[in-house]
Length: 99
View (cartoon, rainbow, N blue to C red):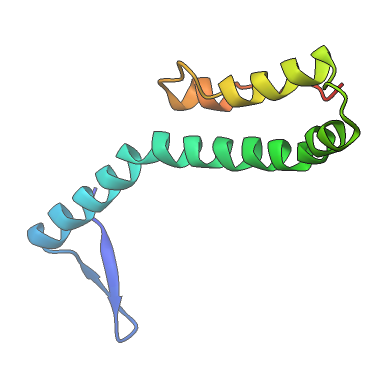
């Protein structure tokens, strides 16, 4: 199916070279899907870790230890990106609940 571009308001069919360039752009975008999904996952994970840092700081300041549940929660967040190999796996990730 031919693709078109607008030039001065007129629809013109892409040349073979333009079609090849567009195909390459689309393939590059598709090839980067996993990296984009992982970057989004890491950003959310990092935000959750950062929002729970105060618990660690408070425990240190008080000279107490962090609860096991909270330690496990933070470790699960750190491990959440392990062994993911597809975009579907990344999209299926369920974040742990904060204790």
